[in-house]
Length: 413
Image (cartoon, rainbow, N blue to C red; front, side, top):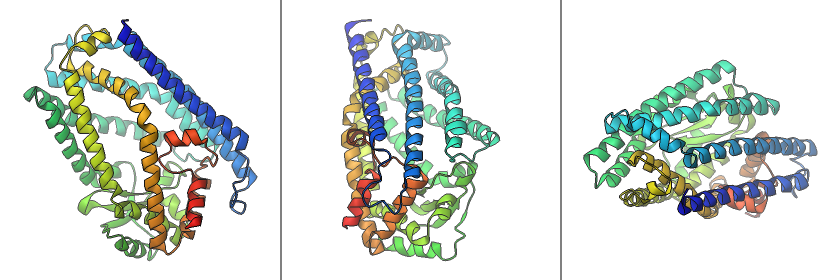
């Protein structure tokens, strides 16, 4: 390897080492404070629940270390061990068309990644999730989901990949702009059709069965200027006991989906408070702002990638004997992951600030914060959320404020 390759390797290892440092800090902090009941939580949290939460978090974190080490070793061998170069030379030696070669190039890599992930996914689902009472999925359903996902992802990638590689072939000098526009339009299209085509392949959606709840939800959202087509409940309990809800679709297909586990665990006021928080995001235009920022970042990134790929220096650094755009995209992605890591705490901070803003509006919509507080407590209890994350770890990785800080903030309101 040349000096620049050693520099890239060192930067990657430094990034990985720092992530492990933060995870160890978080685990040690949890082991030290995990059984302490936070102030103001004495009536809602008991020692037994904290012990279970601590055990779950520790076991999942340790499992995460194993999967992360395995993944990082594979990446290092693939990038720096000559496998990427050999794989690239092997695929292009077939002398197929650029579009077909590009589709096959990335599909084969995705299949390998998917199948290597199977043992880890099975262990997480049928051992850890079973052990702590979350998993309700049968092996038969897991297999069905697996093959549905494979087929669906293949179809979607053939469509997207064919479009992207076709645009590159048609316009070698402006493909960065056309590809960005194509992916943007396709993502909007998928938001329209997903509620009707994709989501029903995995779950059953039906009108909310609790009488009067849909009318209350629509009346609440009207305060925020949001109009939804329908409110559905989803049979999430056939896979797990996790509690959640989300806004789905776009435009006329915009709808609210409530997990049946959420309907089972919370009363109507708490459900309304959770949705009021989401309505707060819409009212503050957080979704639109995030979309604009994401698309602007994507446009700048793809333009930079285009400029880099105009020369051969990136291929020379990593010892690629047959330079082409396909292997170039892999290398750009690898370097981009390293360069973007230092910005993680900034994006996390901005996200947490928006969560506080949405909480404040939710309290206004509901005439107080009490129902959102009880809803958050139930969510943290039912999902075994860590109540004692290390501040550094939370600063880097938490898109939402730690639940104790968030509830204390709401109580001040």
